Image 1: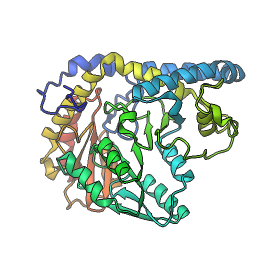
Image 2 (image 1 turned 180 degrees about the vertical axis):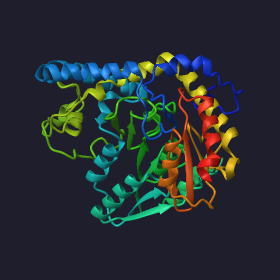
Image 3 (image 1 turned 45 degrees about the horizontal axis):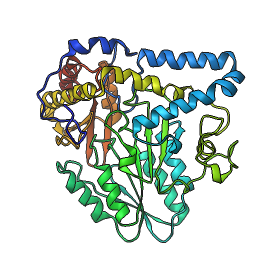
Length: 411
C-alpha cells in the first residue's frame, strides 16, 4: 500500500499476482523474445499511447499547415494542463522539452551566478549532467565540486544532513537527482531544497526517474528548477520531457535557441496565448519547426496507468522490488546496494557485483543480452552495479530467469 507520506510501503504483505496483471501487460508493446528490465533507461510504450502518437503524426503528415496552425494550439494547451496537474504544478510554468537533459542544459546554459563561488553536486549524478554543470561552472568562473553521498544510508534525515554539511558559504547552486540513476536511491528532495533555500542557495533537481515512479508534487518540492522525462516510467513516447519553473526563478533563464516568441510583452508573460502556451513558455520551448506529437500524447500516457490505478501500480512495483531483493541478494556474490527504507527506494534496485569478475561492464551487458535479458551494468569508481527496473508489466518469472542465468553470465 501507499503510506501516509506518499511513499511505497515496503512492509505491506507481499502479494505478486502475475495472473491479475497479465491483461495489463498485454497492452504493452514488448518484444516477446526479450526480458526488459531497463525501464530506468527507456520505457516501452502501451498500445493505446502508440496509437495516439501515431494518429497525431498521421494528421501532421497529411496536412502539416492545418495541424500546426489550427489543431496544435488547443491540443498543446490541453496536454500542458494535464501534465501540470499530474505533476502537481501550474501549467503556466511548465516548459515542454525533448528530455530532461535539454531541460537542465537550458538552465545551466543561461544562468548567471555570482563569482567567486561554487556549483555543488553529489558524486552519484548522471554523467552527462556532471559534464553539463562542469561546463557551466567554467563559463561563470565558478568552482565545480562534488561531495560523497552515503547511498546505502537507510535514514532520510542523514541524507539531508550530508547535503547540509556539504553546502558552504561559497555554494551558489546545488544540483541533485530526485532518484539516483546508478542505485535507484530516492532522495528527500523537498527537505534538501528547503535546507538549501534556508541558506540562500539555488536548487536544480533532475527528476528523470521520478515522474510516474513516485507520487510527485513539484510545487511542494519547491525547487528553483525541476526537470523530468516522460519516456521512462510514465511510458510516454520518446521526445517527452519538461522543465518546471519554480516560483522564485521564473525570470532567471533564457532560451537556448532564438526563434519566434523571443520578443514578447513582459506585462502579459504568463497569460495563455494563441499558440497553446504563454509568451514566456513559448520563448523557451519554441525552437522552430519540430514534431510536437510526443508532447500531445502525454494525456494518453497518464490515462493508461490511471485506468490501472496509480496506487495499485505502485504497490505492484513495491511487491516486485521486494521479490527482486529476495531472489538476487546474496546470489552469486551479489549484494543489495539500494536502501530498503520505504521513502528511499522506488522501482529500481541495484546490486553490487563481485569485485573478482573478469568482465567489463559492456561485456557483462552483452552476455545478458545474448541470453535474452535487457539490463544495464553501471560502472562506478568502486565497482560494477547491476540495476534491475521493475514496472507493473514485469513478472516474477522474468526475475526468476535473471536469477537463473546469473551463474552462467558471471562465470
